[in-house]
Image 1 (spheres, helix red, strand yellow):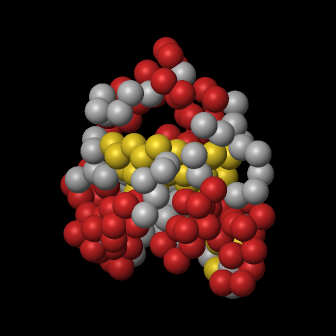
Image 2 (cartoon, rainbow, N blue to C red):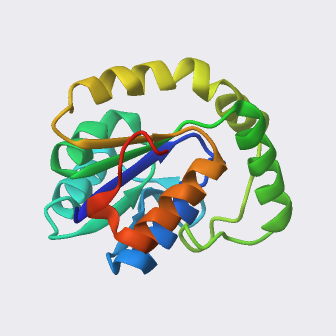
Length: 179
């Protein structure tokens, strides 16, 4: 398990989990938001974005967090493990509001320079509706990758259990059903 991708709603804790796993497993971490958004919240073109990810997934090991639904297949094809954080809308919405307050006027560690934390109604709406509008499609997409180790975590407590188990016995021995 050298290639791990983490997906889920904004506010689910993808970046936090990827940093924790990177520290435990000594695997490089790539926060897609930090590569997609150029300074001043300028987006990357589709061609450049596709090329970047196609090169990135060929690396020997990685932990990549971020959704970017149009390019999920690029990452899923090369991943050994796919972790989906499927939390309630209340948790994720609370967390994005809290994150906005904590990083007011600053750039989060998982974003590019000069991308100060912002929060608008459209993003809150996207987070609030993620479970209803995005999770069904993600679950359908995951069905295409049954040869991968797929871990669906439904709560922060499940994430804590996963981290504890990996610290204790290693990711190679993670037992599904205990999440």
